[in-house]
Amino acid sequence: MEEDAGCCRADLWLWHARFFKTRSMAGRFVEEGRIRLTRAGAESRIDKPSRGLRVGDVLVFAIGGRLINIRVIGFGERRGPTTEARALYEVVEG
Image 1 (cartoon, one colour):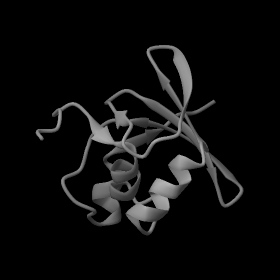
Image 2 (cartoon, one colour; image 1 turned 45 degrees about the vertical axis):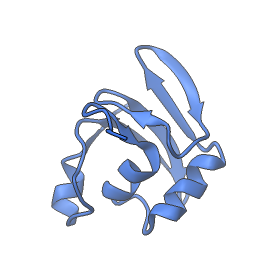
Image 3 (cartoon, helix red, strand yellow; image 1 turned 45 degrees about the horizontal axis):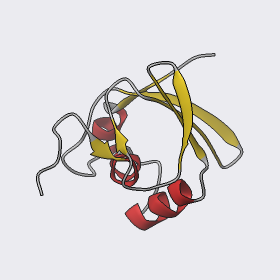
Image 4 (cartoon, helix red, strand yellow; image 1 turned 180 degrees about the vertical axis):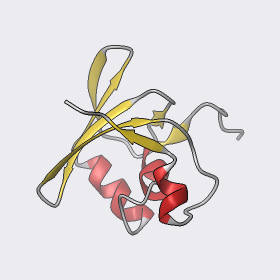
């Protein structure tokens, strides 16, 4: 099965971006419905780890008592160092 080049699984992207230590932790977090996705002005909850993320999607979630509001700006091929992971998203103010 070939994956769409403009799309990445939510659990995989969260792991690549280093928000979670393991991919399974990211998957459980997504399954609990704790992430809000805004795409083209429409807001929804992500509840499946296989949900595709696209460049420009805005994610809002809370980890460790902090509210995180980010925009997806790229996809990674691997879970690299922090500098590489930081290039996958930008913080959205407001």
